[in-house]
Amino acid sequence: MPFRLPLFALLFSLLPIKSYAELNTLISMNTGSFLFHLVPFDTESNQYFDNQYFSLERKFSENSEYSLLAGTFLNSQANRCFLLGVRKDWYQVNNRLVFKGVYSYAGEFFFDTFDDCGEGGIYRTSKENTGVAFAPYIYHAAQYNFNEHIGVEAGFMLPLILVMSVQWSF
Image 1: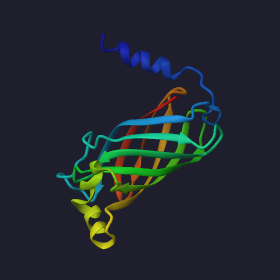
Image 2 (image 1 turned 135 degrees about the vertical axis):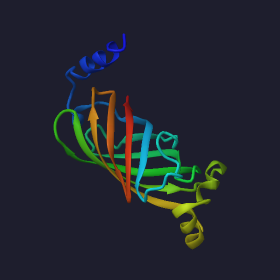
Image 3 (image 1 turned 180 degrees about the vertical axis):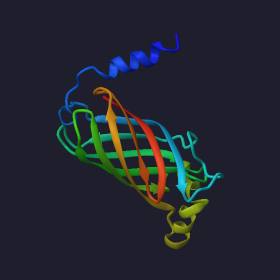
Image 4 (image 1 turned 90 degrees about the vertical axis):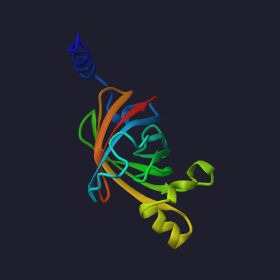
């Protein structure tokens, strides 16, 4: 019984798919994010699967290398933050593998839910200096698409935070 699911996943991943640029999927959702703080190493940071990351992403057009994304997550101090950014697909290796970058604003937003984002870390420093709690997020990853609806990605966010996630496209 335990071998059926991995075997099914392997067979499912071998199904032919269109190239990433040919996909008709314009909207994606990222969930299930795992992260680990390599630098600065901090065992007390909110990490592993505790960041509750969720984002929606919309490609600018069917053939665009750019997407706009918006989402929310718990930062390293476990405070709820807003995320708004742009994704750029830098290089497509083959029909399934793409290297991408995400460049985003992470911080406070005008909803009360995000008021505590600046209670610690770099967010508090930026709030003290500018009046707004935020941090620029720069993330580069490799995304492997099993088919046109599901993919996994792994990469690094500056300064050196390992991130892995699942992307659902529709």
